Each structure stands twice: as C-alpha cells, then as structure tokens.
Image (cartoon, rainbow, N blue to C red; front, side):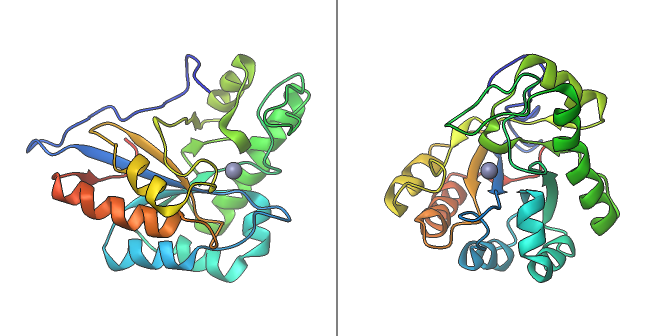
Length: 216
Ligand SMILES: [Zn+2]
C-alpha cells in the first residue's frame, strides 16, 4: 500500500490562510456485496457543501446508473477510478485479503483502462486518480498506472476499516485527520457506521478549522 509512486498525502497540508487541509475519499467497490449506495452520507456531504473524491468501481457504476449520473453532475465530487473488477493491481496475481490480483501486465492495464474509459465517456473528464480494489499494488503495476496517465492513490487515514467500524470508531478515526491527510472510507455500505461517523467527524474537524479539499 506504500510504494514509491503512490500518492498518499496532499502536497499542501495547510491553506494559504493557515487552515489544515483534509481530503475525504469514498470508495464504491461494487460486486454482489458491495453495490449499495450510502444515501445518508452523500446527502450530508452535499447539504454541507463538503468536497470529496469518489472512487467508483465499474461494477458499482453498472449497478447504480441513475445515482452515478447525479454524482457526475455534482461539482463537489471529483470522480476517481476504483478499477474495473476491483482487483489488487499486480502483474503476477498477488492477492490481498484473499482477493486475487491481476495476473499480468495486460490484466493490470485492463483493470485501470476499461473503467478509465467508462468514466471518461460518462463524465466527459478523464479520471486523474486510481485506487485499486483493496488499495494494494505491486511496483510494476504502480508504473503502469502512471503510464496510463493516472496517479496511483493511497491514503493516510483508514476511516472506516472497509466499512466495518461502528459509527463511534469511524468518528474517532476520521476525526484524527490532520492537515495533508487523505482519508479513506466507503460510500457503498449504507448499513455500516460510516455515514454517522463521518458526519460527526466533519463537525469535529470543522471546529478545528479544517478545510475539506479535492486532492492536489
Ligand atoms: Zn473497494
């Protein structure tokens, strides 16, 4: 998850007027157990005008075409690429959490590029950021992402433990963010503690003067 060439934090930790800058990112993983939509979370982000980067997997877009169109039309949200089939990005099949990685350079290219083209055709903008399923890469795969014109993204704060943490733990973990952090959480598990935890953490971070930003 941490290799040269993976961006894991913001270039500018503080704003020109001294506020800590924090990037919230939300993955939508897709697949049989991962194609839900956390409407409470996303509605709160929009109501509070909180910018975020949404990493959409191709399978999630397939399962949520109407919601996806609304997200694409919302300027608060930058759309990132969360892969075509949600596989760890490898050139020799290395698995993460039991999920087999892509097994060749060609498969790694497809994992990035098929969903890249999908997002570009639907939004009119090429995604700038790629985060693979499980956020695991090998070093050759990191180079492939760069060659395809995207930047491999990691994170500094694991906000919701793959949407398994209860709300109070999400609030505590996301609330630990400091200037320059990239927070990872999920927007595809509406039954999780993520929405309530993130909403509480946003209030706490606002109290500390944080600004929520897109990744720079
Ligand atoms: Zn995912």
